Length: 505
Figure 1 (cartoon, helix red, strand yellow):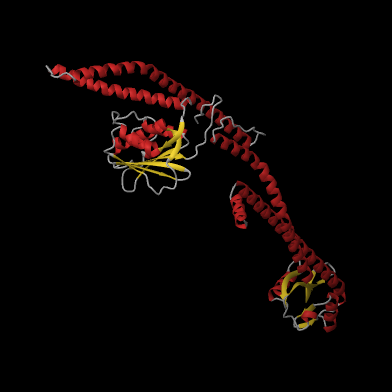
Figure 2: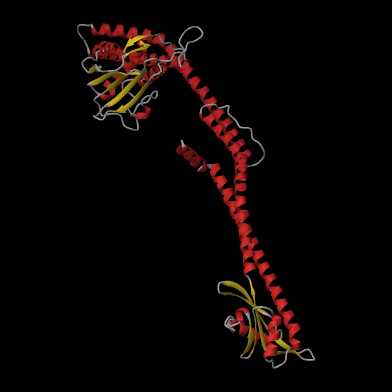
């Protein structure tokens, strides 16, 4: 159960909804992360700058207040007073003399050489000022501030005194504040993710609802409901797509209705023509058969004209019979299409029907019939005996004509269905022909239009099997030859008309 839920979840996430949710969530996460990162960077820079400005201004003010009381060149006392004025962790240096405390108690090792060089250059410039540098001492962050002490002449000219003041300010609190900002930004981003998922779900529902309606419409169209439509809502791309689908469905419906009318007209025309031809063909058949009988029973042939007349009469009989069979086939399949064919179901033993079919048509020498004694089911089905005979005559006749003798007929049954296999000894059916063998008027070799049969025999067999609730399939036997298999249900479903006759599906 849990595995199936996981599979359904993964399948849903691989669809359009999942991709939309993932896209929105990723976009929201990236946006929140970028905004948080930019905010943290800006806040950190502002915090560090504010801290640096405070300490530099504080140190400059302290030195400005204490410098006038210092002597030049300064003695030890002046250096100490300047150091005390600079505050804790300060160093005052003049040449090799130094006064320091805190981290500078052991000397000037904590002062980077580049800072001192930059400070001396700054003192010699026209605009001397205070320099800062961030350093790590014993794993702790410090802000190192360097300031030169300048001598101001009465005319306001600034001259370097040679005294350097360094002060270190602990940045641990600042670092903790920066870390706090980063944690706050990360927390905000994590809080934004569930909201992003919720927004993605809401957005996906709004976007995919029209898509789901279009999907349902497409499924109904595929199932044959040509009236299926979707009401477009709005003026966006989905609404335009919906209108396009509706237009396509309307065009498809018009085309299908037009084709149905044309097909119905063609069927009605064929049925009408066949019906009108039936009576004159019957008369013509009787006439040519009488003529053929007269010529056949003539004891002597006096001239070549009489021989040609006999052959012509025999050919006329054959062609007239073919034409009658074709008309009968068209009428039979037209009745099935029109739903006017009737079934007279009765207990029908398939072995008996097949045996009678083979015997009456003179196929006994070429056809063998087998019924396994160990068959679990009964080969007797409830069916229209005459139509089962038509099916078997077409299947076996097709096997003898297009496959080759000997033909084996194998009858089997289960508790649910009975089946009849017709196996010929021919080369089999080409793979590209198999899907079309039950199509009407289909012949594998289009050039051989005069091959025996109307091209309707297997189609009529297929239609008769269908109205019994059964099927016919075509395949090739592993040992060679084609296999046509009829399957009939043991308990067919029957529908009846209001007048009591069975409804033909």
